[in-house]
Length: 315
Image (cartoon, rainbow, N blue to C red; front, side, top):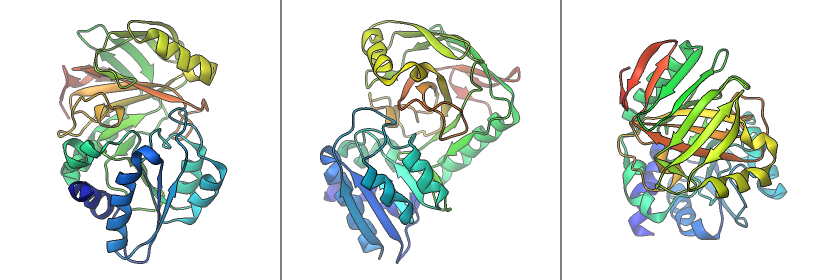
């Protein structure tokens, strides 16, 4: 545990700004329990009232937590969730934030990630860059993304608001991932057209080569090494899981492409899309799953203006 304490202190003190007397809920499952204990230990040092809940491992990202956990969440000031699968895109997380909780989800976090990489970034600097990228998305109506690997995708974001995952969750209702560092937005349903070639990371695999054809905002054709696995997951989650749910831009210079989506999607110089649920961050689709695919060195145009060229941000 000792070797994870630096990362745990960044989580509790810098990112969440936990104060004496606050009610802190740490949600975990057996594979992440040592990480949860390190975080809980630091929170207790800060004088917080800490509750630690260990729940069974879920089946997929975006799956709702057990009812007793969901019912408890709105009664806490701060929720930190180092779990196997993500609670970010769940109604339970949304209701907790609506009640004023500050929430950090840490899906698939590992002990190694607590010791280095994105978790040890300068989050004041990450926040500045992330806010600039989110502001650029907010001003735009149309996104066009291309890569040399073959991605060629366009969609509308008109009327949608970007979310800056800054890593600093100090206000009631703030939420995001830790480690953090992305600006993300929900594309307008039905507007996505083109092809995404995932050459970075998907389903914890960095071998790349997954190609997804998007028509009218829905994934129609999937090919490549992970096609069978991805198609099976989408089939199990239902037809809405094929929705083009998210577009995000990584903003953390310490993040590494390691085959863990929590860190992979934060890598500076990458973008990602997700399929499935976007109901918790401005979209209209409730899908019960949320699957990200990261691609490297993209060129991004917002309303025709280039804001990223071959992975280099220009804003």
